[in-house]
Length: 112
Length: 117
Image 1 (tube, rainbow over the protein chains, first blue to last red):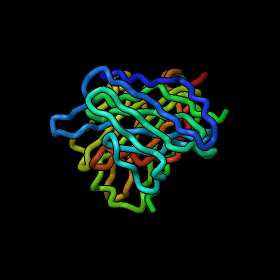
Image 2: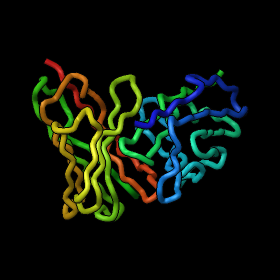
Image 3: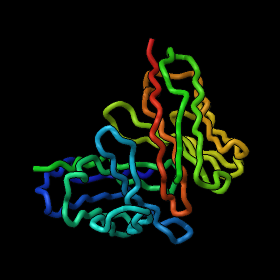
Image 4: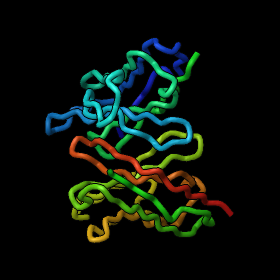
């Protein structure tokens, strides 16, 4: 199984400042079809997960452009350019390149 | 508007069975892979199962193989998860999700399953 490792576990951020979350996979996420199925999810307190980014850097419908994804192979990053109060929650990376699909352990974003 | 509404969760004894349902609307259900993902209380996300558009391919996480069965009824725009031989460690919120072509997951609100005596 592909192991997804996220850092940091927790990220206290000042409102209006940037935040960055890293995700590393135990093997390359490049699929045989050439795509890399790495997604980022946001889970606000008491809410279901919500897709932010898919295939490394594609923002899902309705996601603000302050969220961006980058990376390749085994190393990926989610960046929030200016953190807002509504961004508080847990962020997960997820790989869908190979079954079983696996998730990172989560990064908690909170306001300082 | 895309909607996924899970139902069927509840309290069940160890060794018991439960059938979850996910009613969909706002998109062409038969055109999408569908998925179940769960989240134990206070824990992270765990993928459970996927099913192809026509039900011809199914994939499961090892921990539920032989106990859980994913199925769908395209005429009813519904996804199901039959859960047998339930264990305490199956206690979780179960989410139904639509799987886009980019493996972009659109999530339902979830239904809580509690396995306890």
